[in-house]
Length: 294
Image 1 (cartoon, rainbow, N blue to C red):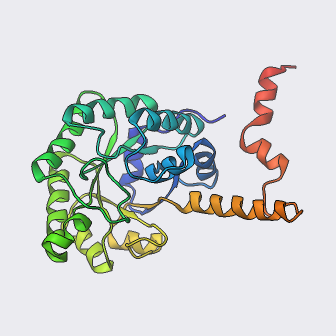
Image 2 (cartoon, helix red, strand yellow):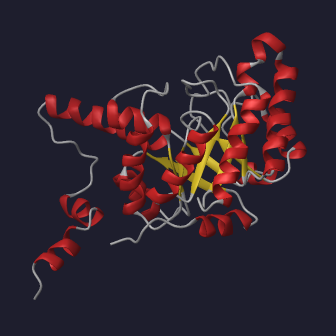
Image 3 (cartoon, rainbow, N blue to C red):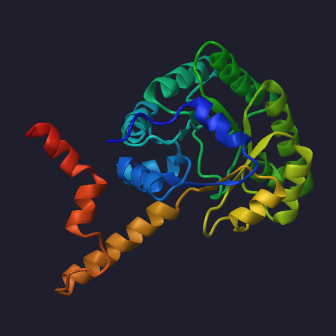
């Protein structure tokens, strides 16, 4: 069976490689294991996907940190690759951010993403309404860096939603300027990875890569705001991580819905894992050997 999920040190090593890593996002232990078995070097626990799969809820800040940690422990226990967890807004003020950091580290995560939306937050591609002011945004990332220095060994992914939140009131150019300013400041504070959520086109993505130094993450959401680009193209632009937040969940939901249609029409679904494949996936034989030693 797999060991505990990879460490922050392993994640740092991956980030130092001169490539853009494909990072399909998981939502439970089984999906995380599939990511690992596919040969991917890391995964990300998507907040949207966890809310949907665990509670059938939208990504609007409804799940508690306790629920996210519970899901995260199962995921981290199931794989040996590094897992980045979605820490949302840090679940409160600077003190809460620090506690969230320590909790995520104890749960087995290698990294955490923290954002500057006003709580309760929402998916960055569904019309973000507001971000906190600069002082509060800086305080969140500084608190995370302080917690890391105190022993919460996590790679910090700092995200801003200012591009979307401020576009209506400030205009597109000013909103992008503010987002880039925040990301530069997060990098200066010590964030390891920078994440501009929902850039509108390749020009904005290139500007992000040109103006913000450090490791950068792109979010490839099918049907979202940001253009879908290949991992090779993203790497050439300067991105280190290419996250696919809903690909696995949407594919699984589509397949389950089709399977139900087949069953209702009296057919056995044709596209599904065999019983043998499913037993292998969950390590059935390994547990039998432990339960019934020769």
